[in-house]
Image (cartoon, rainbow, N blue to C red):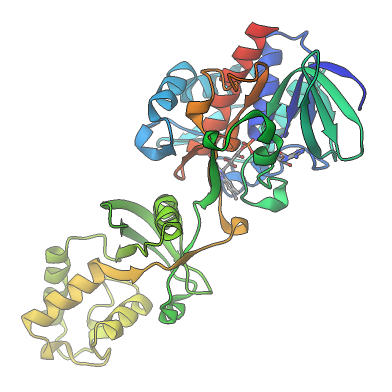
Length: 415
Ligand SMILES: Cc1cc2nc3c(=O)[nH]c(=O)nc-3n(C[C@H](O)[C@H](O)[C@H](O)COP(=O)(O)OP(=O)(O)OC[C@H]3O[C@@H](n4cnc5c(N)ncnc54)[C@H](O)[C@@H]3O)c2cc1C
């Protein structure tokens, strides 16, 4: 569809690009939009979200759940378009029934495909032109707005342009960090924070962790990166390579990645028991008294999965077959300390293909309140291409909807 002139060209038909188009068309149906994506279909990453169920927002939009260069502007953005606005749009404009599990919101079908379909049906019905299998190579300023150069040599002309190309993670979904080079001519290096992984597994040099490969256990984890401690809880998974994964690790991985990249090896402490050391010590003491002739491994097996217990006992210098009656009080304290604050030195993190979201992108402070680059009126950036990332729980998609809604408002006001 090269050679046409549109009111608006949106580059990237992921969550934020689709929502920008839908929001514009819901308020101004006459605006002509070209939505361009390198994939054959739109919403490839959106289809994978929430393990295929699409956790599309969270009713606890606490700014502490986000990492950005401009928290104050992020707060103002959510005041303008927050989680209830997203739910309202999905329910009342797109016709998607929603459901929640606590603070986490999903389509009632529990299928990400429902969200992708709802967005796609809506924008197509309203005349949005989808241009697929087209990679944008360059954006150039023109006398009327912008010329969008595609990889087949064709050019799409538009009054306004939106960069919704995502970050660097899950590159097989088409998000390869293109925002950086597409916007090079329009911003200075100070306006951009390098993309890095977030929500990503963490690795230690300690190969012994492979003994726990495949384990899934509810845990509380603290990360100490020398600047202070942060705490997170949820499922802990140990990957086949001995990496630490799962929600509780993902939620503090962004900070671990920043530490590692600045030459600091952060320390993770795993509380396998989700209990205070004193409480854990008491639980162990009670069982040592109940089962004095059992091995440590058998005596404490009711407290924690045996594979994890045996591993922690060995790493703390205890033989798993030692009789429980041979333990002194100091031993119980040591074992309880290890079970509630097992230390793992983090030396590395996963690749972009393993990470669920990117940190970095165009600085929020370098955009106006409608996600426009002030020095280039008419050029907008939304979604993961902006330097805003959140923890697990619907926070990243909410940012995609919020930034898209603000951008749509700006475009509608300017056309
Ligand atoms: C496995 C997984 C599960 C997730 N689950 C959740 C969840 O449950 N809840 C949540 O809130 N977040 C979740 N996320 C994060 C969320 O999916 C992203 O933050 C969100 O999709 C970002 O939307 P976006 O539109 O900015 O970018 P993307 O969805 O990455 O879309 C960018 C689009 O731009 C296209 N593109 C890129 N460059 C070009 C170019 N040069 N030319 C043309 N097209 C281009 C790409 O093909 C892509 O379709 C998950 C992520 C992953 C990987």
